[in-house]
Image (cartoon, rainbow, N blue to C red; front, side, top):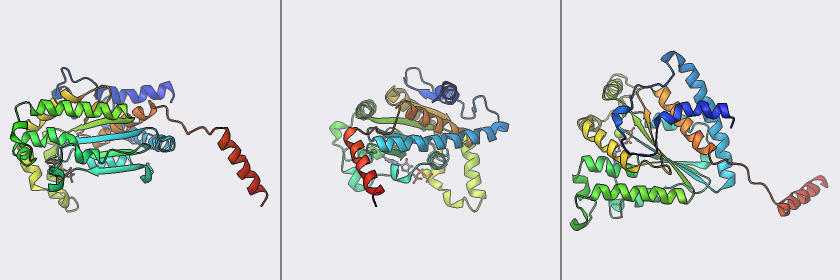
Length: 299
Ligand code: ATP
Ligand code: MG
């Protein structure tokens, strides 16, 4: 990638990347931020997204061919922040054979019978693959922290459920992500940061527009009632788990066109950093290719 391209990407990624949680405050990120772009630059943003999507497709092809690295993209957000649309747009150019998307909802009884990371571990992408988590193990520090009665459902022995449980989970998750990165799984975490006012506007749209009615869920409105608790839980989770190995991106999410550009740029940036290339074949394989050519020519 050329230096000018890297610099362009950097303008969309570095303001939102958190690699150390010390002193991180959610209120320092404005959900309405669009960096240097104004709404009249939307067309430019769309063109950048299209270029990013193309780039991702090229990088993914090499990731798959090389079969050394995996990429795990974690998406977290309040309802209606645009996780689904972002995932749809950012992956639109990707070969489906090299990508899996897993959505995590309330755990099943089988899942609750295991340690809390179990169901996530089983879905970590294999080498050569991009894996997307639509919600993730971070719910264990978010919804479970906001609704602590959920912990009781996790069937842990009471002696293990102490005041320290959240600190223990920050530690478990940080260590797990370090482990993944040491094994060649590149972890990027996105918090799509929507404002409370914009969430209301989107809920209203779901109520007003018959084609969007199906997306509306009353429980989303109930969760909105816990807005402050969720914001605090997100801030704490980001503070305690942001690292160089597994950075958080706190992405302004009041303007969908901007959210998508930032996410695509962050993924392109991480994959470009791997310096992916197609495997170079050795002398043995070259001989095999030459023999195949001779045999085809002789037909
Ligand atoms: P959308 O609303 O866009 O379809 P969603 O991700 O909100 O997507 P839902 O089916 O509405 O999907 O909600 C899934 C719910 O599952 C969320 O409220 C989430 O907090 C909850 N959930 C996810 N993981 C856990 C967990 N480990 N324990 C308890 N609840 C969880
Ligand atoms: Mg929902």
